[in-house]
Image (tube, rainbow over all chains, first blue to last red; front, side, top):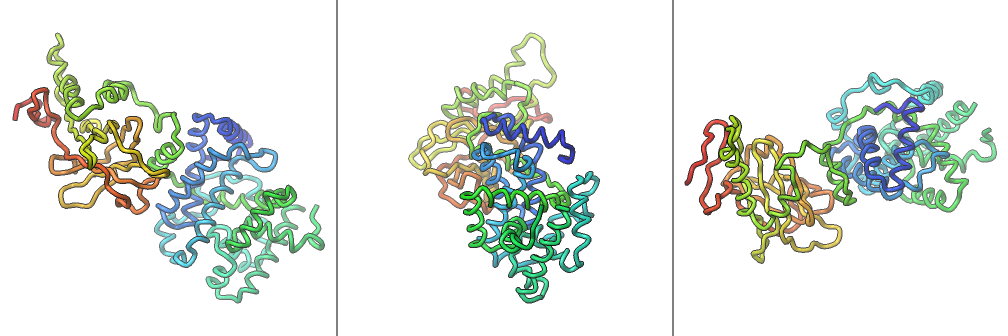
Length: 186
Length: 263
């Protein structure tokens, strides 16, 4: 699935609108086109295949039931879907945080070493812009923001992983977020 | 457009929410705020738009086909759970349902399938290259819950409900293959009110035989989270060769010995 072209995004929006009207074929098509992306997201955050499968299942059952709350003016369908899966994955992580700490080798075994961005995929202008802005951050702060986004770790967990005081981690992240906003919105 | 001086710290909570660094309580607070305030929801949406392009770095990974089957089952959708294969007698689920009184009835029908071409005026060379097995999956009270018929050639099993007992709300039946002396292997989720066609993976196919049994356990709608039965076993059945109309066993017919023989 590539969702970087406006036409493809629009198609997904349509499919989600049809899903809201209980069109099962549209829902099946939506799953076909987006589940690999969402599963990649879940797997990356949860690092466990069967948990990622459960969260993926929860995500799409919620999609079916709550598709009517999708508002294309606010976000594209793919953004809405990825958000939903990330939120569910984060909720899952918060439920049993202590068990998830933290074996980097397990992740390597699950997800192929991937160059960034995802191999072969064309990246969107939004992505390229975000990358440019991330590159302006201090290296340590940039990697904290990435780690936070991709693993769903709390401030506490990030501080432990990076071996810095909690206050330091908070100010790194907050400063980065403000800098990113300024850079992205300019 | 942005005024960090006045909205700075407060607005950052929405950013932190989207980034995913808040703990459970703080997340719940923001989620609550989003529901009650359009302004908060907009601020969160704006941050999603800013940060979410990062997910383009994440490689796509195709989920296993059973995930869609579980979603399908959990939502009780009507559309076929996979692309509809060509219609053959085997695919005619209505027929199996009609026949779904017990394994012997199904087996009789199978015999017709196996023997029919012999009666046909033009003999077909592939006629007998079919092997079927059947199982009557009985509940503790002795009534038949489901019948299962296995088509070895096409690596498929059709599970037809006969009179399965009701399950508690939010529970679903899962079918297991239990090879003699081994741990159960999940075959898949089955339905209480309509026939289910299940693909048989090679590992499963290899274990099918008269020493193996089928069992149904009660599980969460998505299937056992552990890969082994977690709920009570409510029905069991031995696997046998499909018996013929006289109750005699029919040898498994495959390409190597393509004759029907009486035991």
